[in-house]
Length: 285
Image (cartoon, rainbow, N blue to C red; front, top):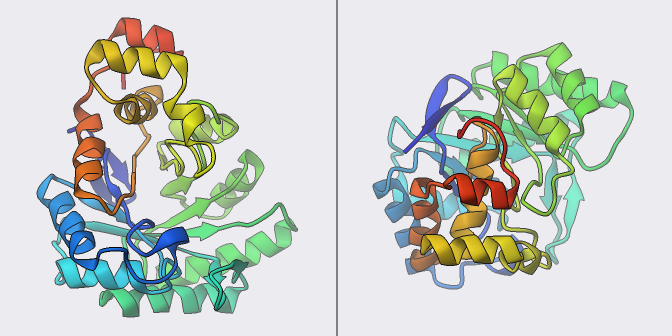
């Protein structure tokens, strides 16, 4: 499987996202804890060396499942988390992005995973705000890196201007933004990441919960899938890998069947006919 740098690490381009390990809406206990544990272990068996998680998935549930399944974690495994949000008692997503909250979030991730350092932590932004506030948030992340609690700083849900501001302050090792075949609003951010050699890690690569049919039901996706004897999900994931050499996938699932399907997408080659049908240009990544 192809690889790409993620900060100080080099990881396979198909990783695993832990967001679906907790219950519905990334809240509460898993639907089937035994299968959730089995999924995580199988992912690593299949070569996953990049797992994306967050303490507020659950809260604590995703990290607890990862810790129970894999601790002590393999040395080669890059654990990446994010801070800037929290959950209330009903599961609502709320900001937690003041400098002291960012520090607390990193410490909570370290505690719940049972590790001393994370490969990277993404600063999750919620809306366009005052650049001075972003500078303060970046200062907090830089301090955490300088203390050795995280290896690299990432940014999530950012536009090109915010990413450039971050790059003006420090090294950014990855960016997590929504991106898929039918939602390419983050393409300018992807192009900047490609130019700078930054890993671009799209979330919702198959569309958000209410938009999956727009991706999986896309006529060209279905036609390519039928011709290549693949599933629409595999074609949509392979498209993300094909659009640029620095895209990293973190498809999430709590199903062993879906895990196998997602991982196989990393080996699916889109031929010239498929690339033309799906609007992929340039040299194959």
